[in-house]
Length: 378
Image (cartoon, rainbow, N blue to C red; front, side):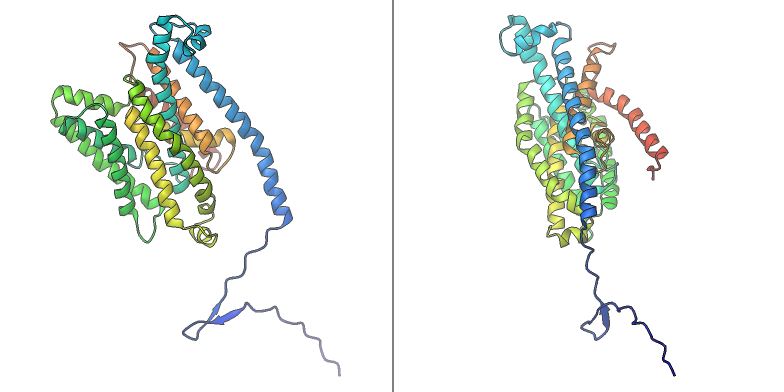
């Protein structure tokens, strides 16, 4: 009599006893990274890196072109060939004064503030994983606006006190939002909702203050709230540039450490040794400071922070954060819109915030339509 040969059963998952005596299954070890996976990742990087370099070079050339046009054109035209001589101090007295003391501070402020807005928006959108999470949507610039309006209307302050009040208002608003969104951690979806609610409340406060103010004071506050580069000079540009010299590289360094780990999820990031909430808090604080100092210099310019990140991703073809490209896109958007605002028909041109709002809304709709046709509209 023959006996049928039986096969060994598949090995059962390893079990261990918990403190209550109930068997608990251990989580299986993660699959090792194979050479094929590494080769695929290197291939993706090789394909996207040349495009990133080309886009960066093109955006840099665009910024140089816009800067030369902004320094050259105006009521007093300086030929393009004379701009470099005026910058070097080898032109005639009139050209040097117009280029160095009138137009260059405005161009420097537009480039610096645009870069700060763009990088801040890209950080928030990558951190929260939501394209709505830009400083001008979730309440950061609303906090800056409230601080500035309080300084102008209630405290009757002026000069450097208004930008300082805007920075304080933005930071306090961010602290309030983070505290309200905290539930054993901060969820991106909850942070966006809390930010939208806080922004609505602060908008009501600003409206109340401006309606109760005197006409002249209300006009001054409304001009600041629109966002303008008309009063840009070296007294306003220098603090912005001095703040951004440490802030920009610090934000890039924090993002390079925190964002790749957080993209894997909080549990995986903690398993990699990242202090999740501390890293997220420091990165949020850096992005808030970028938006605050830019808003203090220019006012709450709409749509620059909102559009720079998605535009940078579409230009580079990368789905992850591209902070440097977003900064270049933000600088180009703000400088280009300001150049357009100065030469539109009208008495003395328009505030740059009017043009960014008019240009930004159709661009936003176009980006949403493109995302929807590609099946990414959500």
